[in-house]
Image (cartoon, rainbow, N blue to C red; front, top):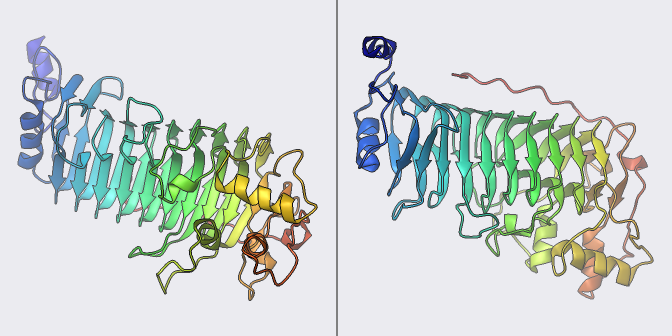
Length: 422
């Protein structure tokens, strides 16, 4: 039997075989063992981790490798436990990689982020669970699975739990796909931020503060455009927001299905969006953030605050907006002003699609297209509400539930293809 086990491991590089099965086994000093394995790995290697729990006290760093695979025995079998970590801003941290695969393992309770992949081209994260044990804890790390400033990124079949920002986060990514993943217990389940040509499909976002976010934020080195969000389920994302106070994600109202902030060229189609108590879909410009925060400028002269070329159609929306906002949050504040300054009331809550009313004058209302059979909708005219609240009104507030100006067909986005899928 021992000879057979040895033969089964011949093809594995940097793997140990023995009575406990293939892969590097947990031991008395997992930190040193695993970090040494990553340092010694050469291009084209497979670093295989055996079954069991590896206890880590510092970040595990991998830098500058090509065609490297880091493989466990499965999400339920190989666990990287960072609960004893005393230093380091991440759990597993990969930088400047070319064609890297991380698969079949769990990363829990890291300081900072769970799995970060930075400055890399050709990234596959497959069947990885990452997150934190404590629920709704602001001290949890921000991002569970975090590809950033990278290209040709695929994240599939994975799980993200209890992140204090986003469970799955693609930031400043070119050509990215998130599919067949599950996000629970996070502030944001899935977030695409300042990224180009990304697709989010066949995912489940459940019991987060917000299910799926598409953001464009100021002050970052890359501008994004072009995101397709299709065939997902965003259900019951009603968890109280436990994000860092003052952060942008900290403003997301509890009970948000899908949220678009200052993003461009976004299509949202064929999703099931249900039981989110505040918003089914919110389309917001950064001008609303400025109004809520009492600021006049982002400080970034090249930043476009508006959400433009948004196409929302053929989604299954139900039981959203039934109990909008939380006392003291931005939604409650805006609704309070609307009801104080107008005859508009919301006895049945908010419609499925909420638009803040900021749009580029040159493009007109058609910049938000809701298809030929729009979902229930409201334009809450944040600009007018804010001006009235500040005693600077020059026109009446124009709340509108009329979908007619938005009954148009946008441009369907093609599916994303990437150069490397592992």
